Amino acid sequence: MPPDGEQHVSSDDVLFAVIYPALRRFAAVVRPVEIDADDLVQEALVRALSVHSLAEFDDPGAYLRTTMVRLASNHRRRLGRRHRALQRAAAATAVSVVEYPSDLDDLRRLSPPDRAVIFLSVVEGLAYDEIGAVLGCSAQAARTRASRALRRLRADMMEENRDVGP
Picture 1 (cartoon, helix red, strand yellow):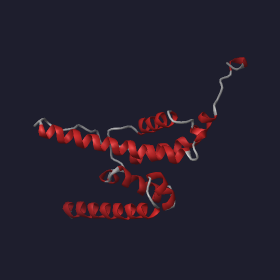
Picture 2 (cartoon, helix red, strand yellow):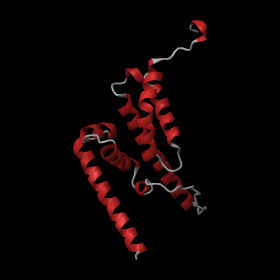
Picture 3 (cartoon, helix red, strand yellow):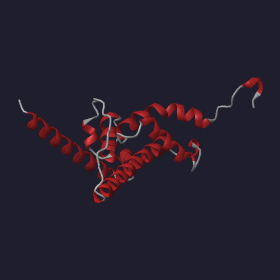
């Protein structure tokens, strides 16, 4: 222990404190409804630290964002498999999810990777080559994903408005 009861602050602690606010905002967008954004950040951090210290990564923020997108996608797949298994077993499939009104509700219609590309391009203002690096695809694939996601979101919202009517 350092003298005078001071605690040692590692470079990982400092680095994480700097990148945490942006990671938290990103997690709030890509997370499944059932998972808290802080839990998603924490799970990504645990997985990253099991590989290396944060200071050893070229871009720890990009690595953690990629991990969060993959964790969210994995969770969504698990829920899909569970839902299909419950249907086959003729069990009740009602899932009680507390929903809070939010500007992000419309984005929930999209898959986690689609939400991620929209968030990174529109909110964070990243270039598509940077987005591709986070999602593990080319810049053109990221651009295409963004275009399709926006088109799908626009069509869903127009359909909803048409159903509500005047």
